[in-house]
Image (cartoon, rainbow, N blue to C red; front, top):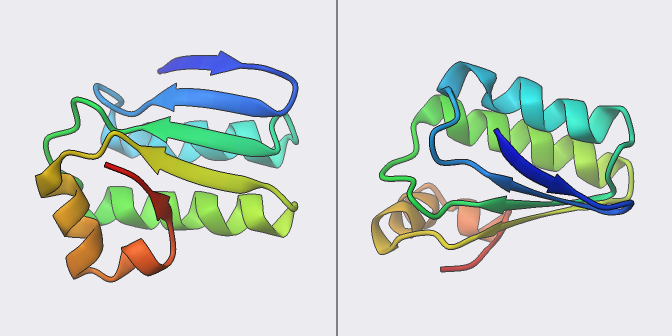
Length: 96
């Protein structure tokens, strides 16, 4: 997982990350209070499965419980449309 971390922020590139490890790796950054804000770069992600959506939802809920925030950026039009159709654009701070 490509990640850059500061004291408050972590920037993570989701492309190329094994789908089974998405939740675990992202939650590890949040649960151990290593970051208060998580920025997930969706550049290069061709599609998003239900499993990945569930993982991002779990990360979002966990980080909000600790007073933090999750931001998804660089979503392709197709990936953004997946979030829109599933109404997750109402949940996530997602930007194209």
